[in-house]
Length: 308
Image (tube, rainbow, N blue to C red; front, top):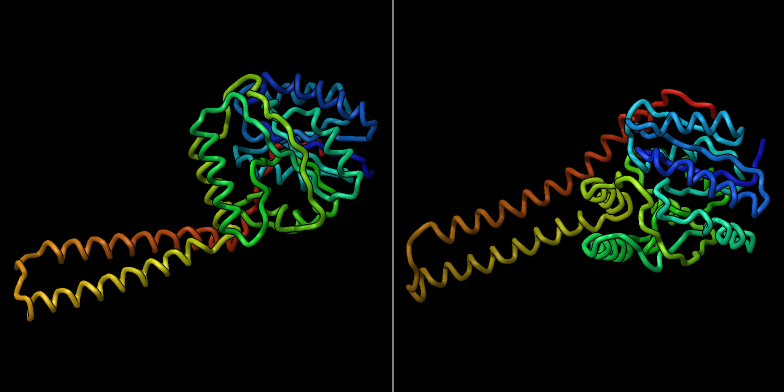
């Protein structure tokens, strides 16, 4: 049965926020009067999140759940929700209440104007450190410069999508998911609404700096080949410097006679070239690793239990 709206909520240790989020979402769907479903994806939580989700299932037939066998990561959890969604429009929202559910109303109405994607663009970000804000802002702008597609800046995964977009995403099975890049790549008419991002309501974020770095690498390697070009350009640059140093060494040895015998210059040159080679091999290795993961064709996630 087709529904008007699906709301996808990835869950990782969010027991404090689940009930509050559910109540706010129910008010939103009531205000816009749509048939709906909420899909909670439990991504290996070790707290009482799954227990609370099952209680919601008993109360409300519109609540669905997917319980993973272990933690597979935020992007994979969202992907599982996309795979299971039945709504003509699909919303992605995190459970930490930093993204106010009430913004869905504005995004939904904006979508009725003929847009296939409406994403939420942050005007401000409460409760986050200067370092996190700075690095996030820098990353989004660098990514926008080096990719061949226009990935919106100052946005996360909080957005609403038409069923057309969802169907295309389901045919994009790569292992290293960067959904906001994939959605931008799909195209169609896209726009945004501005909002103020709240401080996390309760609990601790599951997005550590390590996970954010991994997501950044996935975004860069999935949508840009600039790192490979950088390795090539650096190789040419080092070769040029080496050639000039060779000319200088010949001049100093046979013409000016102004040289000091020793290994210092040789060692420095070897270390410099060796460092460049290791960096280049590492960059190539990142791409090769991602290609290898996709060739193996393992399932993106393993479901332990579900009512979808």
